[in-house]
Structure formats: C-alpha cells, structure tokens
Amino acid sequence: MLAYYILCLLPLVVCGLEQNHGIVIKMNDDRKTTNALGLSFFFFILTLLLALRSIDCGVDLKNYKYYFNSYGNMSFRELVDVNRNYDVEIGFRLFVKVLQVVSNDFQWFIAATAVLSVLPIWWLYKKNNAASALTIVLFLSVAPFSLYFSGIRQVLAMAFAVPAYQFSKKRKKTGFILSVLLATLFHQSAFIMLLLYPVYRAKITKKWLYAVVPFMIVVYVFNEPIFNWLLRFLVGTRYETYTMARTGAYGMLLLLAAFSAIAIFVTSDSDKALSDEIIGQRNILLLSTCLQFFVPLSTVAMRMNYYYMIFIPMIIPKLLNSSSKRHWDAARLIYVVMTMFFLANFIKSMYTSADILQVFPYIPFWQE
Image (cartoon, rainbow, N blue to C red):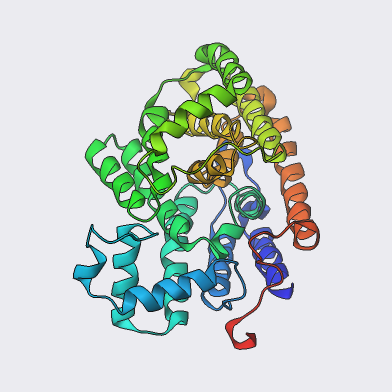
C-alpha cells in the first residue's frame, strides 16, 4: 500500500507548504485561491502509478491485453468493417491499432492510456483550482478513482468531458456535440453527456431551486418507472441487455444529496453575486445527484454518472468559495472537515473496500 500512501499524503504535504496552506481564505472580502503545485504533484504521481502498474493491478487489464494483441494484428479495413461483430466501439479499436503501430509492447499501451486519460482532468482541475487539498481527497474518494486502474475505455471517454465542459461554457454547440460523439466512439454510455450543455446553461437561480428540489424528490420516488423508460434508449446498442438489478448502493447517493444541500445552503444569497460558471457547476452537481437516484436500481446508471462525478472534486471547492458572507465561517469549517474525512475514508477503503476492480494493493509491472 506504500504507493497509495505516497499518492495521497505527499501531495497534501506540498499543499500545506503552499500559500494559504492549501485552504481558500478571505482577505478584504476577496477570495484567494491556492497555487496548484500540490495538485499537479498528485496527478504526476497518479500518472506514474497508472503507467507502471502490472496487468494484475486492475481486473480488466487482461482483457485489454487481448484487445491490444488482437486488434493490433488486424488491418484498418478490418477494424472498420461493419459486417464484423466487435465487442468494443470503433474508436477504441482504431486507437489500439494506432498505438500498436508505434509499439507492440503492452506496457506502452498502459502508459499511453494513463497519460491521455489523466492529462485533461489535471488541466481542468488546475484551471479551476480553489482548494488543492480538498480537490485531491475528493478525487480519491468521490470521483471514480479505481476506474482509472481498470476501465480504460471509459476513462478515455471521460476525458472528452473536459472539452465538452469547456465548449458548454463558451456556448460552442458544434464543438460540444463533436466532443460527445468522439466520447461515444470509445464508450457508448458517453451519450449521457448530451445533458451537460443544456444543464450547464440553465439559469437555475436560488428562486428556481424551490422548484428544482421538489422535482428531484419526485424523480427519486418514481426512479424505477423513469429508469425503465431510459433503458429504451439502449436498444440497438451493446448495452441493451442491461436490466434493473438492485445494487443497494445508497452511500454515494446520500453523499451527493449532502453535497447538493451544502451547495444550496452556503452559496451566495444573491444570484447576482454568483457567476454563470458557479451556477452552471451547481447545476451539474444537482444533475449528478439525480442520476445517482437510479444507481440503486442498476450498475449501468453508475457508469453514466461517472461522466459527471468527475467534476465533483472541482465543483465542491468552487461552490464553497462562493459562499455568502454570513456562511463563510461554515464554509471554512466544511473545507477542513471534508478534507480530513475523505482522506481518512480513502485510507480506510484500501483495507476494507470490496475492491471489485482489484486495485489494492498496488503492483508494479516488474513484480508481475
């Protein structure tokens, strides 16, 4: 477990040595954000761990080695042949082929996918950094951290959520649609990102929250018939066989509901004091909470929510930093409590989690 201790503790030490000690503070009513050295250090270590991991560190890597060897020996014409039945999307097949042309070493494939899946997330967090320490521990505990060690296709698709988000901010619909389409070429579940643009652009102010919250409650109460209706959109895809299978996954649902409540409570009382970006980020958090309502019914819902949960480590610090003056002390306390809690939660999970994706303990490739 030493590698994971290094991953979570050393960057936090760097955050503590940075200006403001890794926590957002207020000086003369101006919000000051932290430097991002600790955050960058965290993602550098994470990329190294992903690039150097063994095929035994991540339950799906053996399947990806099969894809790498199989598709690498096929021609580009064979890989795009619509008459063949493939069990992965065309974009991923072509991606594998291109990497095989460069090198037929599977460790090269693991390293390349590590960089390409992590780099966009690092850039997004760095650009929107408000509290490095909190962002790091939220990524470890709330974002799908373990998925990066196993689900290569989906984390590559999730990387396209970054340009999709940027295009949503800049109102560039064409770029947004292209980003989502490219993501679906790696993992078809990425179609759920089509909700990002309209949700981000929606003007859900404090006044509208009085209507949104009851709506969210209705979605939760009627989650089963709504999810049955949503499953119809999977017909004709490789995911059409997914059906409802109760998972009992309520922990993350309660957590996201708590995040939503905090976001509504601490953000500025005046909508004019909030930027369009903060309102849009709050909207994404509320959407992620709604999607989590369906996770107790099926694991496929969890896969769809990953595209939005990746924004949570960025959103929570930004929302807390936009707290109203009368809630500023509460926001600071929440920063400290969250940072300590999620750090402890990650360390505990290394020993007590179900570890379905088999990422604990860390195994480097030279110890296979």
